[in-house]
Length: 71
Ligand SMILES: [Zn+2]
Image (cartoon, rainbow, N blue to C red; front, top):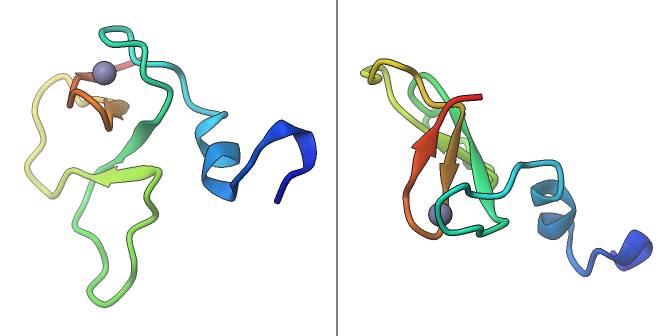
């Protein structure tokens, strides 16, 4: 997939996500509350938080530095 200047599908997906406000990495993940479905692959652009979440619930998590933030 090379259309639109994106070299990979992952780059395309990550392009919809905000950059990390701490380290400016672009590959931030969308936080998903709840346990991942067994035997279902977790998309690499999401991060499962499990059933126990902190308050405030983060919307995003940086894949580079682990920073979490809410919108
Ligand atoms: Zn970061």
